[in-house]
Length: 495
Image 1: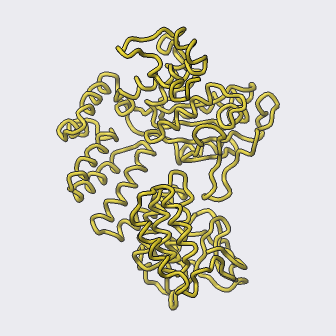
Image 2: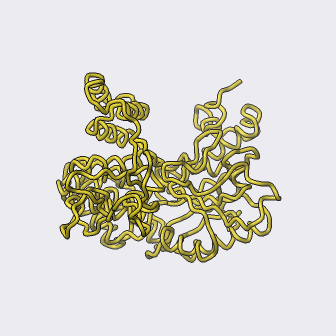
Image 3: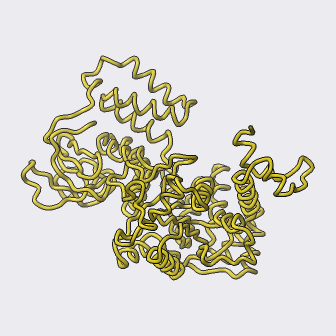
């Protein structure tokens, strides 16, 4: 029997000379599922080789849903209309033009031209696409989006609970917002695990509108087909600044032109011009998730230019709008570590390590912070996780060797829990350990501050959290790390 690599790829559709095999021939060899996946792979490949997604404005959004009962269907149809009103070119099977997309594979392949993939997490969708007990095209859409996730933003929307279920069947498991940022929302049992960049549970119609206004709105201009083709022709010359600057001179909202220009400058070592280009991009790009990628680049380039205070402020601005953004928390944790604010760094780095998409670097940075605090067991655990992501990491291996030499020489080496009472967060793992003479956490970044009017020495913010004793917190104080929990007093906490 042929293995999976021989039954799912587009290569099964073509002979060695490049000629196309008949579907019946592929069906006989690979079966119905193998043929379907080969057709889908082929359709996605053809879409992906074009620059269609980078040159189309307004940008496209793929809305994925498993059709269910009348109430659900009506709600999703209204969602599609709302998304259109919020500026997106919505790809939705209710809108499918069968003269343009003659097969379902051709329609599904349109998701590789989209900037955002929105999955409506109804019970039927979860059954079909997440748990895959009743696998359908929704499963293929979800998996195809995961394959393209480096170029597409994944959003999960849980519809209101008062809507009836899919045919009266309950969901196979709870589909809710995670109670803490370090818990993934959905786990698939087959193929890739769906980890959404953003998961949102809708309360009511007004609640949905607020979410769309805040996080899922494109308010920029559009391009007609002629101008879109003109942009695509110039984007095809990826290694040349001249066509990129021509695009930006005429259409300064085209994010891919800014991105390619930044990469060209950064890769040849022109860091300050690259920083200036990113700042110009942020003045012009209107697509929300494209802006976020430039904000990440902005933080990194500020660090590389030596403006660490500016990088701190830039990271805090991202966290204010996207409290679970792991990259911003990693950068801020790294910068707090440099400022010798080890406990504040630890708090942000824990969120970074738990975030979907997190890689080896946050774990290694957190390990260095634990080493500075003397918690070698925790440092070892984080370094081992870093090596799971990147087995060839020389830095992580060197730090492990250092721990081996220091093990047993520090009084805190084996400590994994601290007894309270101590101030911490109700919603994340942050705990606030004041330094001598600096008893209060900064309300913006969590670093230790004095009780005076001087701005925070790390981020420059004015506000602080006036901690008293366990019985003195009379008002709800927002956590400066996760931005959602409240400051409380804990009897004990894991380090």
